[in-house]
Length: 117
Length: 213
Image (cartoon, rainbow over all chains, first blue to last red; front, side, top):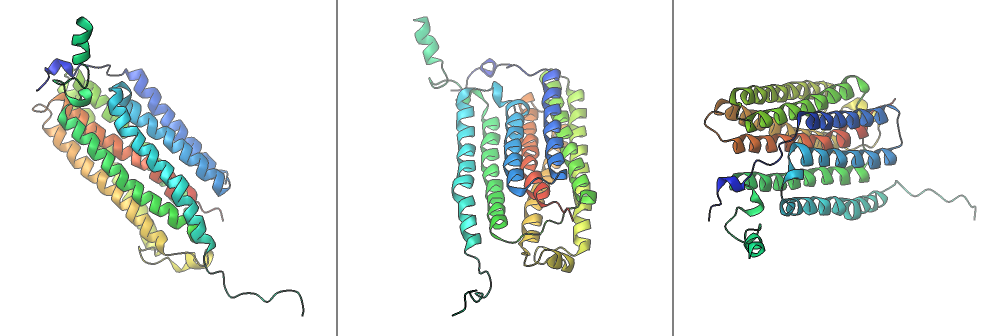
């Protein structure tokens, strides 16, 4: 039932150059995000770009630092689709519903209409 | 016949570890999955509240954004040192691995100290989980005190994970001679997960609430 230890092979450990370049790109993406904050982009653009950049950073960390790129595809397919579905749930269900909730908020007493009867 | 033997020794043919990872490592991956769903629930709840309520945007560039950017840098560097630790451990260089793990824990502790200072700035201004400071309620009229609840809740949960991770790493560093390489890898997985969560928390909480006035 237990496989020989060698089956858990010494897979490619990743070179120092790879790790440093992943780290550099993570820093660059972060600096870009802070820069966007500095130039005061409108909130909607900010949100979309930040979420996109965060997903890319997460993918880099999971693939290279957590080594998932070099694991079996079956493990990748077990982990990644669940997170993708989670993100789709947020974008397609919860954000639209939050806009619905926002629009249903009480806006204050009704103003008298402008036309004179 | 040779191909048949190969087919049986495939991942699902039996007699091999599932996914070709050890059971401890698989357990850590499953824990990471469940913990990421916990953070997703918190962050999605925060996003929902944020989109449907008037929300203050109080983070000035100094001190909040500078502090949190430095914290991000510290956490990313700690991920790098952790990766170096796993790399050294894979080459059986135990004392080098121990030093890299201790460096990672030190950077994690730095993160916690900086974050605590950041919390103190906000608490001194009058922010609590249930109440906004008076100046904010005037500057952003009608804004909800849920800002404090979500801020402290999410960043506090993350800080708790960092603190637990530091303790975990120090234990692994202390026992590195008795542990296998796989155990160092597993502690690395947890630490990278903590960094990954921060990659989402930092933009969603800090960068979307910058005070330009």
